Image: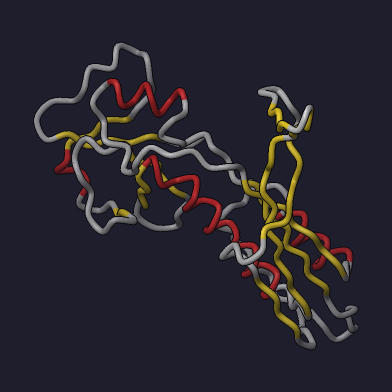
Length: 215
């Protein structure tokens, strides 16, 4: 569960228990860091995973930031584990459509399929000989599905191939139910209104077989 934070200059906004936001005086933001550089009042921030001082991402930018940060962490994990090859492919959800009488019909409850996206900005390919594995912990996203499993598979079980799938979520979209509720209270969500399709990243790595002198 992500934590929503907002700072106020004079008085906190009366939320009437409709949304859960931690409201703090702006004077208490001295140690906080923001992806925008400065912390602004009345902006809804999401507290991001951080081993140091609080790191804050504007609500409307969090989904995109989270996807890229988890992507970077997955690549780091694979490299620390000594991967010889790493590839990343991007897939995007596309709603199923049917064709009838020469017209394309799209159904609101139609199932979605995954289509590969070229030149997505997440494309990655690395080829090498590999190296002795190093323990990448502590992990920046320890609860992300597949991250801890990948570490255990290579370090403890000698796995030579690992795949991690990372999916974006739209829970922090400015057009989501939560986003619309926050805007009703006059909060700034830090992004313009837009909707984007869910994106999935599939990162696959191959590792050299363990040698006895590797630790």
